[in-house]
Length: 288
Figure 1 (cartoon, helix red, strand yellow):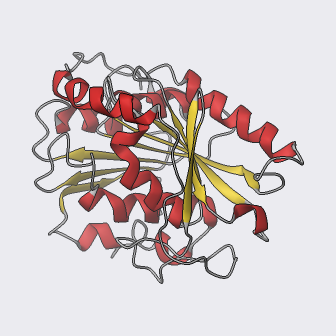
Figure 2 (figure 1 turned 120 degrees about the vertical axis):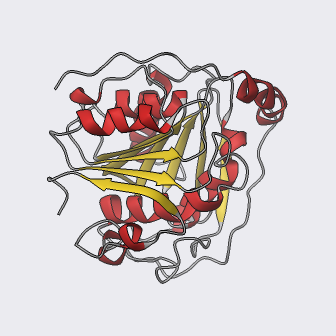
Figure 3 (figure 1 turned 60 degrees about the horizontal axis):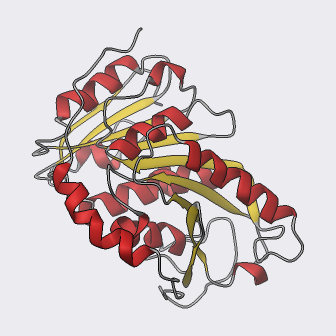
């Protein structure tokens, strides 16, 4: 099915909010603590409490192209950690989404967030994968031998959500999670499972635009989730209702966490029965 053209949403409000964030992100980031480090195992989590921080203390490393959010003691880890590449909304910077990205890092992920305020082409997101590939090979890097390059997800918000779809065509990507994605992407090129998130009260990227991506994604396992009461900026700062389902999605697809998978699969999946969080949930025929 061919991808339909969509009007380009204007994100002037997010651009204004991001001006302060850009200035702050240019200063070096100190490590940010989550909780004390836990025993290293592929299934280490917060016992299914997807809306809570995970067991890993976290750190932040600001680079020229990407900002990394990761388990603070990764150099001493006994395992490899999956990767999530992130794209910002128009005019925004990773600092705008710091709480969400640290949440993922606290669950054991390495998050590579593109510093660019114009992420749609996904160039910096792909460069983030390249950089982590080199870091994994470099004996002098804290990431040496600790990056799980076989399990990589792509996510982003607004323009960055479109970028996650664009990057989803990269063969290194295992799943995509676009949050309120802008229109400039073609999901027909994506060959991996997709979780497309919308906000019920989003007046910038209307839910119908996200649904059109879902409708086009009839060749891959795809889920549409509309967060009840959410507007376009609910995910900014404290991610609120976006934290738990996004964490569960990546824990299942990148870590093989079966408990997390139950949130999305089966006739009584968690998001299917949670009408307090979700105003609309749709799953296509390819979802188990």
